[in-house]
Length: 326
Image (tube, rainbow, N blue to C red; front, side, top):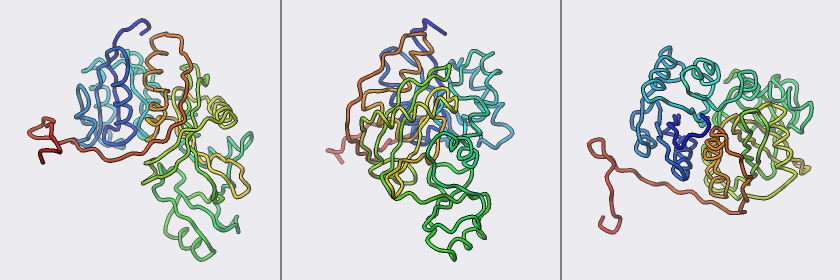
C-alpha cells in the first residue's frame, strides 16, 4: 500500500459518535480518500456524510462476516478503521482473510482485544504494573462503600451503577449477572487518546479532562498537556501490545491517585477532540500505512463543547436548509 495517493476506507458504526467523527477527521486529510460507511441502521447520519454506504447485519448475526467480505470486495476496501466497539472484533478475528483481499484492518491481535473487552482480565493483567481500582467478581469480597457495579464486558457507561450500602449491593447482584465490583473513584476523570504504529510502538498520547459526559460520550472536554499521564498511557498501550488507536479511561481516587478504569482498543467517541487539538489519528494512520515518516504534531490546550447538528434527508438525498428562512 506504500506510496498511494488515495485510499478507499471502510468506517463502521456510522450512526455513533466515533464513526461520525472518524468520517469528519478523514475529510480533513490533505490527499483524496473515498469513504465507505457501514452500520446496521439504514438511516445512519454517517451515511449522508460519506462517498458510499452499506447496511450490515447486527454483529451477532451469522450473516455479518459474509456481508462484510462482500462489502470489502465490492468497494475494493483498503483500510478498515477501528472506530466501533463491536466491529473491531470480527475485523481482528478475520484479519488474515481480509489482508488476502488487500484490506488492512488497523486493529490489535485477538489476545489483546480480549484483555481489553473483559474488564476482569484488564484488571488482572494491568494491575501487575499500573495503578487500577480494586476490582472483584465476588460482591461478598468487599465491604468498601461506595463502589461501582458494571458489566464485565460492558461498553461506555451502559449498566454502570453506584452502590452506597450492603442492601443496594445485594439487590444489584440479584438483578444482574456478569458484573464486576470496583472501587469508587470520586476525582477528575480523563480520557487519553493513544496512537501506536502497526508494530505496536506507541507514537503519541493526548490526555483530556472529561468535563461533561452523556451516555458515556464526552460532550465537553479540555485537552491538557501532562507528560506523566501521556508517558504512562503510552506504556500501557505498549504493555498491552495495542496496534493503532486506543482510548484509555482514568480517574482519580480520593487520595488523588490516577487509576486506569478501562482500555478501549479503538478510537473513541471523543477522539475528534484530539483531532481538533492537532493530532488527527485517522490521517496519521493513513500516513503510516503509506510509509510516510510521522511527525509528532504539536498539541493545543483547548476546550471543546459539542452540540447537535441536523441532516435533512428527502427522497434519499441530503437537503440544504437555511435557518434564516425557517
